[in-house]
Image 1 (cartoon, chains in turn blue, green):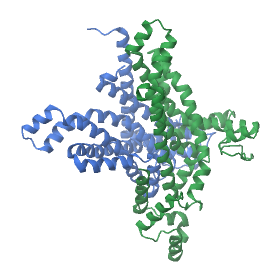
Image 2 (image 1 turned 120 degrees about the vertical axis):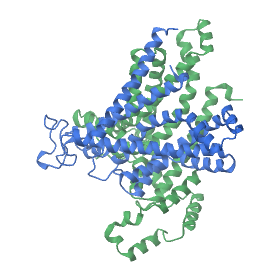
Image 3 (image 1 turned 180 degrees about the horizontal axis):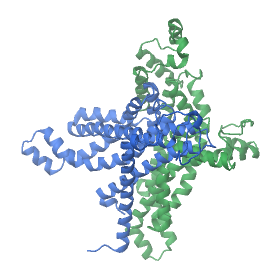
Image 4 (image 1 turned 90 degrees about the vertical axis):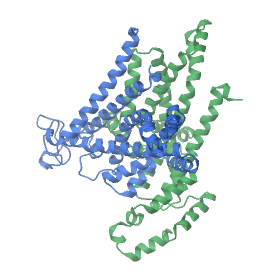
Length: 279
Length: 322
């Protein structure tokens, strides 16, 4: 049956946004991959005679307070931001999902212990915990990622547990148990693929948040070690330079576009996987 | 749960490599073992772990959160001093987000797929996606640096005296004292940080309202109401909106509690003397008594807000009242 025109239009636009999101994300991934080859200058080439130049043909996005080319730093910044975002979300989702599925399978005191631990971390104000941890571990990309991981996994544990509990009572699991398949095999070959979809959606939407948080911690001086080219710390370096607006504006726009890309993509994925939410 | 949270922060604070001694004394003083030992003894850092936690808990029962290492004042006193600035800022931006977000969400749901729906969608996505610290920079650059419409960072003009009011909420205190000049100054200083802080909340509220309204407008009771010949305005505002507000209130409560903690970035940039900036400073200085105090207060706020949200269900939904 043909769809009514209005619904057709709606669907087109919905997935149109998702495709746009995918294109933005893909473009930034390419930039991150090719940064050393497409940057016009090395990202940390200091030249004080060229400081705070307006955007021009030689420096498309101008230069910063040390005469470094903003465009080159911005392109290299994609590497750190995307790497940090992906590490936090993938590791966080991995740890959280494992704990959640284990909890759903163990039942009894094992589940109790794992879920209490999850609740414990969840009841923290995440920003405060991440700030305190990042400050305590010391400045550096890896340390910041670890600090974020500590507050990141619980939501995945919650989600994975509730999804796995639903799967557990499904007939195919009973059938597999009756057939005498080992528990480990049932868990990883049968249950895991079935809880994968919603977790993947959460990951996509989460990537934007992770990139924002990492940039925020860097902005506060708790993320990367200077003079690393990172978007959050680039905005921080330009925050006093209201006249030289380009120093802080462009890295911020870079963050904005990446996060919007992941949000569009995640939104579309959610609708695609859950037709009930489609409107 | 809040006490458990304090235990975790307490344990973390003692097992991570960062050392408050170094952060506080600086390299030169910290290289003298005698000074370090004396300093440790002064702050009780030489006692065994369980004893220190016991001291903290005992203090807690007496309403004492310990003493901040960085400000050298009781943590509770610090929090009481900084909290009003944050509550004032968060409340103003929350009201802004609600006043703009709910009507926008309703309009987007009623005229679905129209230009207003598109505007609402883009606005909420940008609001959720924009880095707070960058938004703050842009706002300051445009409205303070370039146009000169808004005053600079801070809660008041640098030469103004803070009002001597009872509450610490400057809007209230200046109005109380009849100081309308101070009131205007306070309001002018509030606007930019409030907009920045409201951006993400506005996006969330708009999206939730839209989705909930769409859901409610498809329900049978809305069809019945229309069939009874009620005016569309009554159908939308009385029948659909009231039910749609339940998820909005749930999210709103959480968002308000988040505003209180999310103020870290906004307050740092706008030099806003509130809890957010205090949190950042305490974390950067590894001032663990202060961090534990803030954690406790924030966790308690979350619990309180959740309670209020639960209670509000009864007002919105008579079925809950039984």
